Length: 325
Image (tube, rainbow, N blue to C red):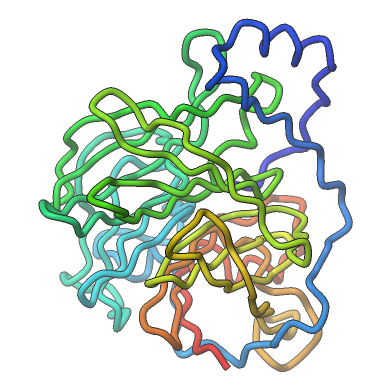
């Protein structure tokens, strides 16, 4: 979620918090601010126009342009996109053909108010279920991501804390993405820290998501921010909303490491939002990604802030489908 710049935490505060943690809990992250300049990956493949895209409110029956859908995560499954928004507890289920104002598109689960939901992933092992991440929630004197579990019909089941810690000053730079995988019969989640791009590996136990290790992205991946993570087999994708790019690499099947990779850049367009008809940075709010196939992805976008150029509102709060070149 794009938020205002945050204050630097003093070294003393970080040390005091570290002193209160156990050995396993000592991996407290104090992200450094990315600044205002972008760090686009050079030589990225520029994508063509989207295969399809639409504002979320236009897809959902009973909603209009006054309804905000601050999309922050997406997962593709069996012909549908499951979309979480950080301003809603209900989760959108949208047919992948993007039919407008259609009864095929529904809002699932329950709740009202701002949810703080930043990511969604799917567990296909044994009993299928979804996991949804709350970015960073105050808990026992620090801030931790909280992982909510839903059944296959998106009924809420329970929540577990992720064993990963943030200081209060950096609580708005928590988990922006999560991706599930199973190794050796155990459930794992890969998190994505917004301000650093670090990828904590967390193993599910009966009481928490236990910290195992942390993956560092290849040195070539230096985004200004990191907004989502997804897996497709051993393919791993990372997005940046500030840079309008995403990167696809390979997750090792035998260790917690990532190699290789190709960067993709979203297309530019005109001041009226027409893709390919200008040089304006249109896709400035990408917060979620999921693979539809080996050669196609779905992206979702957050609401543009009031200080962003007006042409960036053409692509905000939307679902976007792109072919990879």
